[in-house]
Image 1: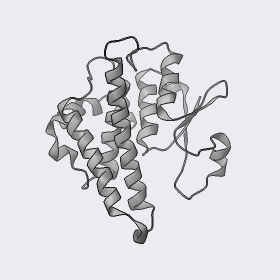
Image 2: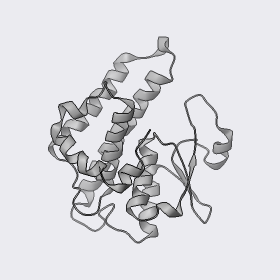
Image 3: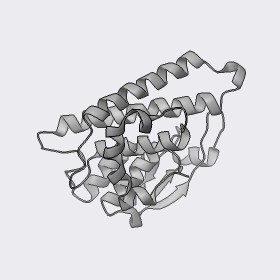
Image 4: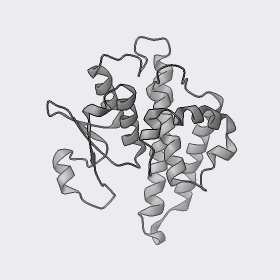
Length: 203
C-alpha cells in the first residue's frame, strides 16, 4: 500500500497513527506529498484528482481519499471492530467525538492557509478569529469529556491527539491549549508517549 501524505497534516498523521495502532505501518509506503492552495501538483493529481491529502492506494489499486475512509479500510483489512466501536454501545459517541476532533483540525488547517499562504493584504482576520473560537470551544468540550484512552485507542482519541499535535506544531503561541486546559494536558501526555505518537510527531 502507498500513503500519500505530508508530515505536518493532522489528517495524514491520523492515518499513520491508525496504521501503527493496528500493526500495519510496515505494510505501508509513505510518499511525501506537497499540496498547497493555488499550487498545482499534477503528478499527485494523476493519482488523486482532488489533490487532497492523505490518499491511500491499496494493493488492488483502489485510491481512497479522506482520512476517515482510509481508517475504515485499514480497520476492515485486519478485522478490527474497536477503532470505530462497531456494534458497541459507545459507537455513536466515538463517531461524534471523532467528527468534532476532525472538525477542529479542519478549522486549524484553514487558519494555517489563511495566515501562511494568502497574501497579507487579503487576509480576513475576523474569519480567522471565528475559526479559532470554534477550536477553543472544541478544546473546552474535550477538557471536560475526553475520549477514553484505556486499552486500545478509538478513532476519536487518535484524531484528537493528532489535532492537539498540530496545534502544538503550527499554532504555538496562538492557541494556548496547554495553559488553558490542564485537564486536557493530563489526558494527552500519556497518549503522546505511546510509540505510535512518538514515531509520527510532526516536525
